[in-house]
Length: 90
Image 1 (cartoon, helix red, strand yellow):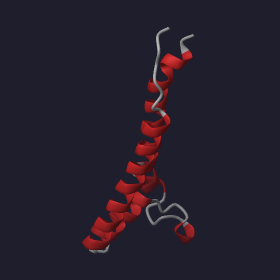
Image 2 (cartoon, rainbow, N blue to C red):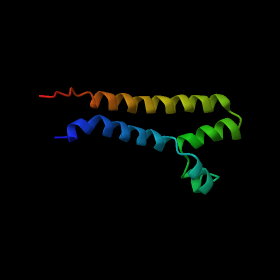
Image 3 (cartoon, rainbow, N blue to C red):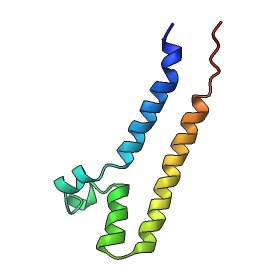
């Protein structure tokens, strides 16, 4: 059966997709430059950009970037723990 052998590749692709969802910036910024009504399209990356470069609060933007890193790191470690299966070729 080939499905168990594809599990590491599948989990890697899913993890990269989740990480890329956190990094989306351009599409949201072009469609709603002011974060939409009541900041409904404010994402973590747009928050980091807004705090750092628009409002000049570099410390707050850096802290948000560290939090984003920790969230992505936690997802990565979770994926590695769940994907830690021993493959046997019996």
